[in-house]
Length: 580
Image (tube, rainbow, N blue to C red; front, side, top):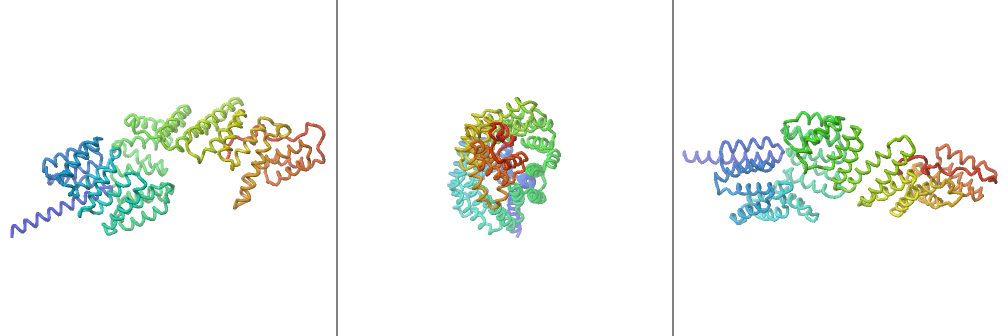
């Protein structure tokens, strides 16, 4: 009887320990890392077995602490060399340290020892191969985990991790395999696990221009299936943030906070999220409260970002310098953008421009890269100067910058726009031939667009205010502008709105054509265009007066000094505002 009682107690103890390990792993899934750490530390302390040391080392490995992970795996191996997961753990440490060949050697040795029949060995090796950024081998993970799912012990986690491995290959053709295995994981959990269903929904975010509405619907279904899966609330918050629905984003992230352990790590992530949702003042308060309490290298980056947004430019510079000095290889374009914003705040434009260029060089996305350079052009074009020569020089600089952007831009979406700007600003720097050349290139890129025609015509008139009466070089471009905008207005759902958008430039084109026919002594035709000017409903007083004066004429005077003026000297309506 006594032996039976002892056996029962031993069995209960084993079950309790297994439950504690499962609880620790669940805490990790729930992103409750302090709880997980305490669970595994208590197990190793109360009963220092090979298994308990392994899971404590496993926790540290997943928290990227190679030193403590290695120490516990070695203790586990010393306690029982037959418990091979600790050897797997030491292989993972090699992987963390960048020794991929050494890691594979260890993993292969353990697989051979177990004849590829130990599910836990295969599962943990496959998981290790995709667990550490910079040292992943997704293809090897897929190979190992495909072996693991063939064993009877394969569970929902096995299928989920295999799906993760397929995602990590970053091959579009593996998307179906990932989705299939997430579905297997959901079925294995009897539809009650939020983890695989949330990850399956995330697959939709990997396609170009994802439909956030569909992802949100699937996230909420996942939340309904498993309300205890804490990360789903964070994921929904982050999805709302991507969709720029910031109030909803905050609501769900706060729900995540309510369900989390509110550790310093979770509070730090919340502070970063607040910054990303443009709650800059609150983000700064949270980050400042955590100073000295968190050891993430990026802490001083986010603190600097938040300080800059709150106008604390000098403090922001100090903290960004601190981050950059300690992490010179982990810099992003946004770091240099922050430096640029700080410099603008400190009235140091040269430093701001220098950092915008550094941000452009660092940014891999071509659209974003040239946008940093465009910001320099915008800043220069908006500067007020004290004399005409300085103004002209500014516009020349802006045009030069847009020429640079055109040469660097690798897409097609904005090629026309950037080329248009390059030519447009040459008119205002009085480089008329270069302006004509640039605008001709814009027309060649998008001959169906109207703006380049009106600005090319304006440039001809700016170069020669008597163009209508002499060479009439602008005529064909004004006529083409009218032809294109006629079509746009006719095809518009709201014709009145479209006509209003183009009215002033159309009035300008009609005025030029009126002058052209006036110079040809064709008064009826000149009056026809004067009436068309008024029909545009332009509100420009000089345009209206011109048209009314033309319509009052009974005959064209014989003197050559009364030809109505064509356009303002700039040729662009007297404004350097960017064209639409």
